Each structure stands twice: as C-alpha cells, then as structure tokens.
Image (tube, rainbow over all chains, first blue to last red; front, side):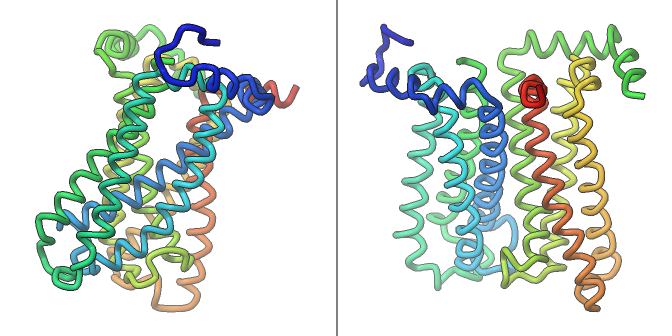
Length: 168
Length: 173
C-alpha cells in the first residue's frame, strides 16, 4: 500500500490492488500467464503496425497499395491490442498503486496516447486522399511522417513497457 | 548435454564478461530485453504473417510467394538479434537456463518452428510459386503453417515463463 503518493486518486489505486481478483492474479500462476499473453499481443500489435509503417515510409511492399496494406493489417492490430489491454489490465491491477507512479509506466501511457492520436490523424486526415498516392513509389510527406512517428512511438512503448518491470 | 554446457560456461571469461556488461552498462538488461521483444514483433509480422496468409486468415489480397520473398528475410535478422540478446542472459547465468525445463520446452518449439520457416522459404526461393502449384503442396504448407503457429505461440509463452518456473512447480504441487 502506498500512503504517500503524488499521483491522483491514491485511495482508488489502493482499492484496485486490494480487490480479490487482483490478489488472486498476483499470487498465482495467472500473473506469468497473463504476462506471456501480453508479450504475444504486443508482438502482433507492433508487428502488424511495423508492416504498415514501413509501407507508409515507402521502404517495403510497394507492390501492395497503401490503403489495402492498412486495411488488411488493422484487424490483427486491433485484435491483438484488445488482448494486450485485457492482459495488461490484469497485470496492472496486482500492484496498481505502484505501477501508476512508476515513471516507465507513465511514459508508456503517454507514448500509447501519442500513437493513438497519430493513428487517428492518419486515418481521418491523411488516408482521405489516399487514391492519389496509393500505388505511388513514394508516399507523400504526411504519410511518411505518420509512418516514422508510429514506428518510433511503438518502439518506445516496447522499451518503456519492458522498463516497467525493472523499476517496480 | 546441457549440464556440460552449463559447467563449461560457469566461470568462463565469457560468463564474466556477460555478468560485467549486464551489471555495469546502464540500462543494458531492459534494452536487451526490449530488443528481444522487438525481434518477436518482427517474427510475428514476417513468418507468422506468411503462415496466417497460407491459412487464409490474413492479407488475402497479397500474393503468397511474393510475401515469402518480401517478409521472411526479416525473420532471419530478427532471429539473429534475438540470439545475440538472448545469449547475453544465458551466458551470464547458464545454470538458471540450462537446468530450467521451460528453457528446454522453448527450444523444443523454436527448433522445429525455424526448420519449417526454412523449408517454406527455401522451396519458394528455389521455385517461385512452389507452394501453390499443386493441391498437395498447398495442403502441406497449410499443415506446416498451422503447426508452426502453435510452436511460435509456445516459443513466446515459454520465453516469458522461463523467469517464472517456480509458479509452474507451484501449479503441479
């Protein structure tokens, strides 16, 4: 239990980690089980995003239209993301008060948020005019910037995520 | 055999170097582990994506042999990255790994998974479109893909469980 904490709602995080479910996960094989599924989910999320990012950067798969690559990968990205969020929440619950004030965890959340904003911007703005560059050998600067930003942010998410366990 | 390897590594200059690096280079353990996870992500988007394509579960519009040629070289680089980052930890604490049954299970999944990947890649490289030419070849590729998917899941889950072997024994008590 963290009595003296700088994060908002300290009582709430203490309440979360005192839940029977949190304690059950934390003290049984459910913790490594969820953690291993989390790594699998992260692998597919970042892997599928990597394919789209490299396509947007004009580095790979130029024979595949950018819009089709995005469409074909997104279902795997979202499916695996749901798996990662569910398993990640299970892990977080076990020591919510400690994770919430863990700098690596905070950085990871910020990077995830930025990756989400970047993805939404790409989806609703940049992808609007995709017909003009769908099969072009060099995607326009806006698409390349989105791809590069996504690539860096997701690599950052992996590093921050792995760092969480070294600080806790 | 693994006992011999563990004994040979224990106290060797290689072990001392790995222990020194992990203990003295700031952030090296999480950096190496993050690169290892990044390598897993690359395997997921190369060989695993090709398997999913064979099974009709991903990238339906993309040509199979073109995908194999485009994606699978990434797997070899990822495996090299993961061999280097993984060896750092194995060499530093050989007893922890070579006497750990989960480490053995991981490699019992990894070796056939890599073998299947090599077979699929080499045949397609020698003869583009090899796997799609006859129904029998396509079926065999699909069977290999399905088996390999299970094996790769085993590799990832096993890899993470190496650090939690105690829980497994706790489970069987």
